[in-house]
Image (cartoon, rainbow, N blue to C red; front, side):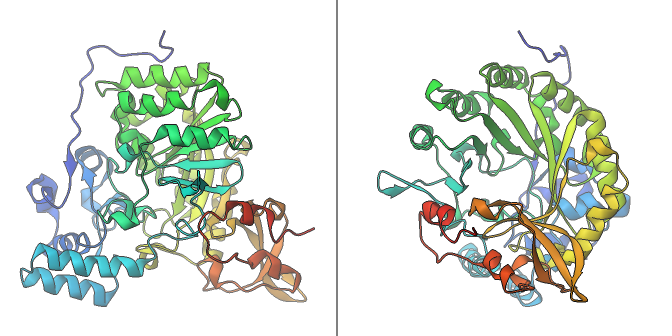
Length: 456
């Protein structure tokens, strides 16, 4: 029995991807100036570009381009590449260089953009049977991330995306695995793991038939210790039809119900970056259908310059989410990868935006946490600015950490009005130095990073 209401006879809109190969054939392309078209063509040789007809038709206000937040969120901008990188790629395109030469130069630039921050390659990949497990990350004791091979793309790409390296076709930069049996075996040997996060890309790009294979494996009776299954997805914003009118949307709702009925908590980690993503009828209906299965939706996004660097935007988004049954969860700081120089804001500004938004909402929206940085040691929460010996300092804490004993212990960094990331901060006191330590790079260092350098 399907607890979510099914509407028969609804119009099933066909998903239509928009990429550099066909964007010039869309009616919206004619609305762009030559300069904006050039930026799309040049920047997309290095950073991935993918949109879709729904995003372009329903979410972007073309009268406000290029300043429209959703245009900034989905279409490449000239400033996303450093000046010398832009000029290099522009020159190659102007010279009608070979695809091989363009790709070679693009890869050189990509390697300068910190494609795998926070120890993703060096410290997060666990081993099993004396070998690393591709497509799996185990950074925190309780939570394992799995990158299903079938879910390593999205309905549209965010221009800020810290997972951009998954989409550029360079195998050495990609996480992926379709061996769900190997993951299950690893989980059975790690009873301390309570949460599994399917991520990507976007797992919701998969058909329900394929997704079912992954989720049903996690319902193995021997995995009773895995209490929560999370699915990281932008589909709720970029293709809500996935949950409402796609041909297998009803089967997807049945699958969600099956997970819940097997005593698992199912959480869709909905990546909402702007209130307009919640504004359409089908986006709101998607939330209602998901909730009717017993699953929860949690809202999270980075704070992104040109998109949502304003308290009112966040407050509006959180209030709307609460009204529709989505739980405000995280405001992240834009990660130190890709086009971060274009999107980043100083940490003090991020805190001011969070504080301003938090002050505008009721208690039900105050489940949100932030600003939070997903750094090498863990999730660093910027609590605010205070003083020690009449000197301003950042007040920080770890919401999650490789070393669990660091969690929720306040520590301090010298105030720096220009700092945009944790690595730019300096301990305020000798005692605070312990919170800035890093283990040396070593594959499969999970046991080391969890148990070493403990503060007693």
